[in-house]
Image: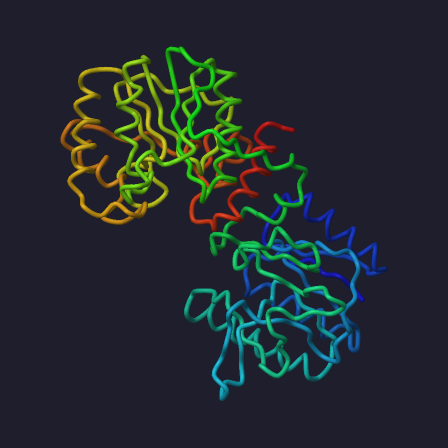
Length: 414
């Protein structure tokens, strides 16, 4: 059997090492190709099968890595592939969405017909619709269910779809693409990289680290996201010690009994500690900051471009202890208090909408700072430059904690 890596990412040394190790452990040959999209991926697969009748190939992408090292599954007559999690096609459907991040194909007439059809579909998407559909249908008769097993080992599991994923080891292949996007950043490579143990979760509801400094940072996380919060706290504590800043850590929502999401408490908590410092910053618990970043204290109010189409992102804000800023934060707090339903983070525009609305009044000429290096998605820093503050948005909570833990190790070089 031959293991073929079809990689849409470059610079993935840890993932390649994982794939090579698996191939060596099972006596498979290994090679890889760089593929820019599904159009190229399936044309390569078709060519490989056509050139090697009767041979068997494992195809794996750069969003997937091996957990189990032993291949203990039956070699298919034609194709071995499983379905997407939660996929329940109607009985009369002949095709089903398949998890083609990892599958095995024997080069036969049956498999060649299947791949030929897929090539035609993705070619149409690419050349006619000018889009790529990442959900590729395979004949239902050839597709195993998502939880397909052999010798008590799962074939291919999507990490994001399984909150208990990290408690299990009896899985051959793990797939991770938490943002469900065509990111050029491989989270699979990240999770194959060395990383420390996840930090213990402190039991105290509130803590002050490195007190009494001119500049300070506040963060808040709740028990529901405690592991993610502990990773962020470890990162911020390290940053605070390096830059001689005070860190306020809220590990419990002070107003949880009022059914108010902790995200809505930013103006209130900033005001609570503002008088004790010259500058104070808020950092959301889904962010990591590099010690190479210097807290921007050049003005009254600093915010950075949002990752979406908002004026700025309220996950990272820097405020001067000044009457102007107090007036602004008090106005934001009043606006938040006027909203009856604040039970979840994003309801009624979330706190971000309130910060932006009042900024337009108090700072009409305000422009957010570019998020070229600060408030960026993982892997989106310019080539050769160091990310300064990374924002891990849009990920399931159980995935985010592990991704942040590995990424923090890369940021510190540990």
